[in-house]
Length: 551
Image (cartoon, rainbow, N blue to C red; front, side, top):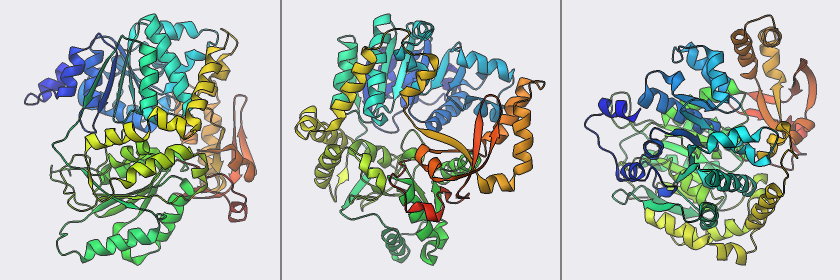
């Protein structure tokens, strides 16, 4: 497939990272590489003619990678070459079929994707590594992976429990003959140590750093990130006679509630009216979220349609959902500190291509905690990250310095000395999996991998506005006399009006009604919702909030 891409890009040449993976196709790899070095192409070259899987933590990132590989690299006979494998797969396929990007039978494509029968599959961790739970029939999945090559991206984004599932799976796949390549921008020492133990001596390690470009000039602000800070910065931009171009600003915070609060305050301020503040997080109904994801990708482009550097005045407020694999390139970043790994991922969304000046600060990191979500951040890792961050305040942060900061601050010794709970949680989860007997779990227990207690609902206001459309298509989706494609299309219309919320938030809402079938139920709840803010508890319920959502 890459040969066809090379014919289209005849004047291009492989980068050093890509040449390296191509030369080491028969080895397991642990590679750390800077943003923008072509990790996707490197992974494809390593897979070569073998059966391959790309594993990423977020569906948004997986969909973006699928689109890019299918449209820009494979280009033809896509249904025979590449597949998606996650819970929203049918929706993505259906939308692509409407745009004539899928020409074959949709149901057959879905079945073949679930069977993992296509040469290349883009998937989430829980879709292929669930075999570690040893439920009846897990052998089929493990047998498939035993002759495949698996590329694991953004490994630092997994929590300790999910990391334990992944490492245990890596060890088993390696033992059965499969190959693993971990290709990531940041790799904490503890994770590296566990990977090396799982792969033993059968691996090659390498680091690729782009030091020819300066991207990020940091300013550490030991205060809470507030709307006023962003407003003042915009005022300074407008007053700067040397600033002759419009500027794009990305704001990334650690909890949805803080993101919503900042959006409200910025939207109400005349000073930043020309920046048209927009908000993105995980509590929008799927239809609204998809629209916002398309908008942020367009607003965050490096180049416009004419190939010139894009100059657009805008402000986007978001959460950590923008961290993984989204190709967005903003001029300035305002963010809260969670830990160094997350911070460096967020930095990758600012001056991504390194073509913008960073003589003055372009990344502002606010270290004062706010939002209930911070209760779930490991305090030791947070403090170690903060101490290391203070050392680079006011400096341009090179790619090598980023790697050094993680190695120095988040060493295994520092985590142990600081009594971090991270290692203990990892070890507990690993022991739990290791102690499982075969067939002790069943297929329904596969949800343990993500351990997310959430409920999919339809906001009452959305249901009121589109009641007839929702009711009609819910009935169609459960009508067995219709063709499967018709039922999928009807289900998609309903699903587009749903949002997943934490179970405790659902319990804090009043259930108005529900859509019920023999297979599943969708509650309709009384809550605040609009397409600009997303889901919120009713004002009289907010005082009872004790946990903040993180993404």
